[in-house]
Structure formats: C-alpha cells, structure tokens
Image (tube, rainbow, N blue to C red; front, top):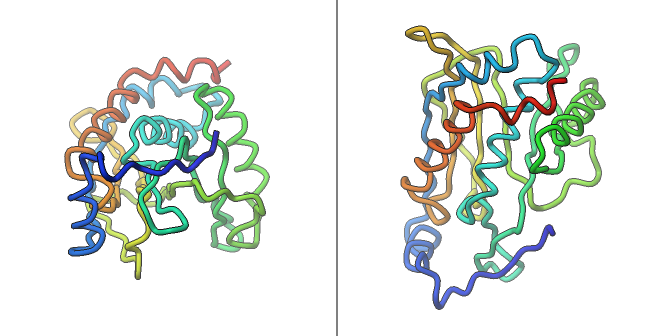
Length: 221
C-alpha cells in the first residue's frame, strides 16, 4: 500500500543525525559513479527489452529495499517513510526539443513493470506539456537521463530543497572502458535521510543487479 508511516523518533537510531542535517546544518550531497552494465547490455542485445526501463526497474528495486530512500516529511514536518515509492522519469520529444515528466507504478515483477513503463513512454513521447499525467502520486522519486553525453560529474542545484528527502538519479550515456561497458550515474541525496554508507550500499546493490541480469528474461520473449 502507498502509505506514509510516521517514524518513532524517540527510538530512531538516526534521530540525532536527522535533526543535525535537517535543522542545524541543512545539507545535500551528490556522487557520480560508473556502474558496470556489461552483462546487462549483453543480456538485452537482440531482445525487445528497453535498457532505460531496465535501468529504472533496477533503481526502483534497490530504492524500495531501504527506508532511507523512501523517506518524506508528513504534514507536520516530521520524518516518515512510504511503504513503496515509484519512479518519475523523463521522456524526450525530439520535435519540440523538450521533455515530459511521467511516472509508472513500481512492480516487483520486471516483465509487468516493463510492459507498463513502455506504454507510458510511448503514450507521452509527443507530449507538449511538462506534466501530462494528472494522477502523479506524492510518493515518487526522480530519474533523468542524458542519453546524448557521458559524464564524470553531475550536480543539481536546487533552491530551497531542504524538504526534499527523496533521492534524485541522473543517468548518462554508456561508454566503453578497458573492454567493459559503464553507465555514468549521478545520485543526489539529502544528508538528513542517508549517509555515505547508505549511498555506497545502494550503488553496490545496483551493481549486483546489473551483473546478474537474469531478471530481464521474463520480458524478453
């Protein structure tokens, strides 16, 4: 269920850290890493599975494993955790040279997620408005793609972003290095929600999913 559940701050191990980085020293941070997608690229070659959808599913799966990346503020401004969060992503309109921001529900089954995400991408690829859907839920996190360029550093400058606890991901164009295929990934994180340990664990688990892409087979045929 898409429920925002309050955190028992009195017993929360992160209480002091949250209060420090939320109130005393409001702080976000960004990291850019190369994720090895060699096995994923090989698994998808010659199949109808879209790599962008596979990327989103993997990110959504890892994000939903951990409360640190499902955090939000409730109506009173207190920390809470969503039961599940869904990806909000961009679809580019080449004729207008603009993009639309859309979303699709997270599904644990990749084949189901792929089918629904592809439908959204195809439906809104000619959208002329920034937010063409009227049913965007509050429990989404953002994924953007810069498919025209690879990068080694990327940082978002967001004004008054201290209430935004959800992670933000930016994916770059694949490139080959030392016989491997890597995907640039920038992660923007609120320090009140997650530390470097949590960010590193997220990246490690994402890498593990890409290294063993058997989960894509259900949507391939």
